[in-house]
Image (cartoon, rainbow, N blue to C red; front, side, top):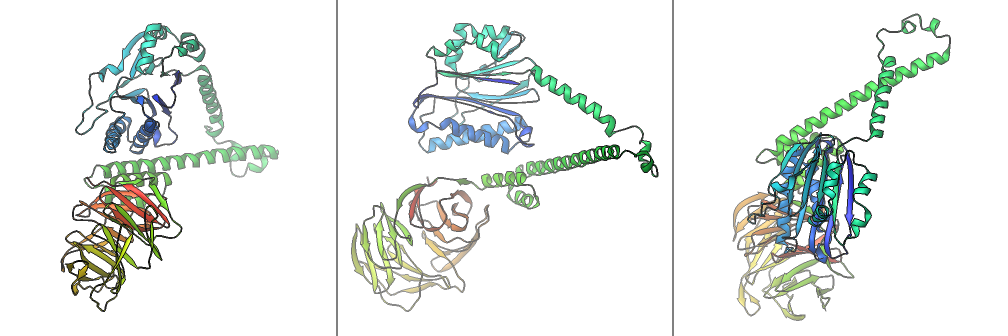
Length: 576
């Protein structure tokens, strides 16, 4: 198979953008899918979509080879995942590519072609002097908006030696027709670099037309055939020594010393034996490895067909002792559990470590050892242990006589009726105050009476176990490690466990609100944010290498803010 890429008057940073990718298999997994070809054009591209085609290419390549059983199934799954990726782009308000994306995806394995496309990309097959437009099968298809389907279907067929496949964007296709290039290509007997230059001279690329042409010619060149013949000849000749019909007399018991008067001959015989034995062992290892790969491939396929593949895949992961297989299973588990690696947006860096973070109104408040600051680094010198959102501002607390209401960088001292208790965190809900003692997971409740005053407290919840945090949305959710208890007022309702991959060992913070559909968890050990619905079903996981020491979490449902050492990062949430 010979591959030729031709580029015509490549565009500048803005305008039409093109991307061609040819990926040939590099391991035993990828050989199941054959060679993958991607050719794309983004017309009228804007600056922020400069790398949009590369992202599509990466998404397609990853999905095609990670779920490989056969090319047809792999391409079908890839179509679904690519449509999902493009739908997510629209949710992120990236819509400039709609109506401007022209893209072809196809693979070739054992002379069989699998193909899909969207937009005006042209794909032609030249066989025995005849041109067939493969893309005409897709030309009358339109994007389906609900749910979004950009790539709708695929075709497949058998290829033959001397077949020529040509993929080109519409502008280059029109140029080829005008200049008679296609007629010249269909008459050619053998395509190589020299006659291709004659048919498509360099002067043709200066016609002011921007685009590309990818040509795949299915024919082994002469040098490749010679190499194959040489290899076969060597193998036939060598087999005479490796597999003699009768064991030579000099190897029979008792005759070795007599026959090997020449020590060099003995060494040659020994070398031949070692080569044969080494070859035999290698073939056994290869066969055993292929059987193992086949076993895991079959088990992975069976697991993926289950309604809930997670438990079967986890069990299979424990059995796997091969890095490539382990990585493959983990990638599937990450996808099932909606884990994505992200690059969070850095908002601010401070001189000291952030203890807590809270969002109130449109303002983000950060608690440090001896001051409270806004994101804009407007700070108030103050020494408090904890903060909580309250009435478009925050309440900062150290003890019943050392409290303050802070809003718009102004501090007003307040107090509450004293009570003999220990505490770790303070929370507010409908202006009522809740204090948490993490040691026994007890909650002290202060009803609000107005004008920044509170009534005497009551113990709402008394437990004899530890917990790390709580959140309130009308009900009270407390958490210890991966176990969540749900209360309504002081009455226990239900217990949940966070079941996800990777497993949860210790959650440090939990956040939700009455108007949010999701619960947000902070998992510093695994450097991630976990988002679930209120049945504790995983909705999304955000993981980043920037989350090395997470200490605080805040959200308004649209965005998530996290504190990591002395930095504040922003992540786009999934709350509708």
